[in-house]
Image (cartoon, rainbow, N blue to C red):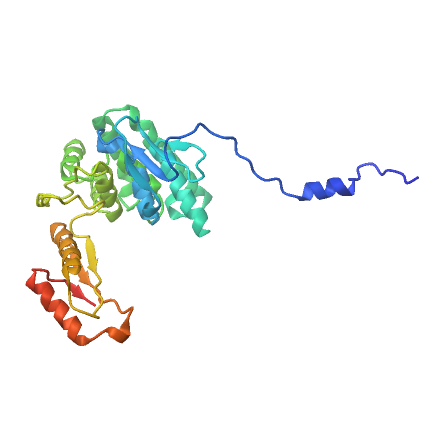
Length: 322
């Protein structure tokens, strides 16, 4: 008989140990939300909508992965998890999830969350926790607390943590009421001392393209309103039958009309070009006419010249032709 050695593992057991057990997550409460649906109430103030989450999704170039859903019955905001296994609630929790998911997909660490430096990550968490702790106070007290805390830091710095915009900046901006509109900026300016560094930082944040787009997405979730982001930037009323352009901000909207120069314009082309021209003009942006070259054997300079001439006849004047 072979003696059994103490502490030895039978071969079958060793093989079992080597095989990685699949991760089985417990089933969470079933959500009414489909995966990647971000739902919130359009009747609450801008600061109570998921403005942090939307800004982070825009900054990570993942906003197209999420579907915005207007829900008049919902308290707070929630995101349907991509796995379909429940949902995550709360603007900051959703924002962190979006940022970490984007970092995981790209295989990198994000400066938005503090990057790879442990101290920066700790500082980031500290500022986010601070912003969250202010939520129980009124706007005036929140604004003065943030101003007195940030002013010494912003005398020589531009951002709260590191050298680029981060979750800490967005969370503190949201604690100020997310003052991205002209009216809300004026309200904070009346509370804080004139010329203080925090007001300069607030203006910088309000002018961030990501913040502007997040504001329009949050305000326009029900497709019946849009925000006025700058003084004197009132837009023309919508033409009958037209809808607001989701997330569009004045001065930074570009539309494109891509005809193929293998024939003359027809009615279908006219409709598409007029639609793109309308939104480019309404949002004070640009219309780009990009000639498609997918069928070079049928393309002629004659058609290209004719298309530009015919667009002019129906009042469409492109800003760029390529």
